[in-house]
Length: 196
Ligand SMILES: [Zn+2]
Image 1: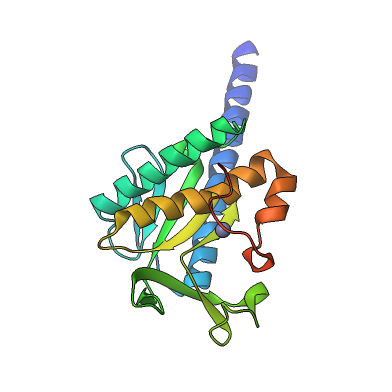
Image 2: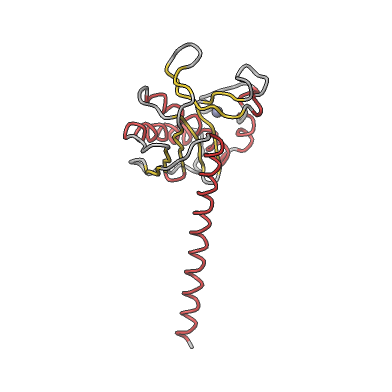
């Protein structure tokens, strides 16, 4: 009888584990689907940065992109701690989608790989290109924390900065909801860096 109870308990435990595991899998699939619908891209490649961030790419993420992502997260975590924010400061808390750039230079001709996304709250503002805007980065989800940037072949400092900037929204969401709300929408003014 004891052994029987133990078996039942073990079965329940593994069921609970499987349920958690499946839930995480379903959540990840939802986030991938959202990133695909926002960017119009298909993220066929999944990778992990050297520090352990989850990275998805239209193409196989380059080593230079992966280490630029890590440098951005290092900076994000440092400035977050400095501000007393301690939640979601693990590399594995972050999923970064590397989309295909919809433009490679900005209106001044400067190298600036960006992604065209629906204008939403930016409609009618100076950002509006006629129903869409060019975004350098965009938050996709909060659980797990996910955002989108465009693929770069140079200027990897820009990639690190974008990772830090998009990450700021996620850190604030999980650590300081009031400040998150005040800074989430750049159409109301204010930009990055938010955390000093
Ligand atoms: Zn932002």
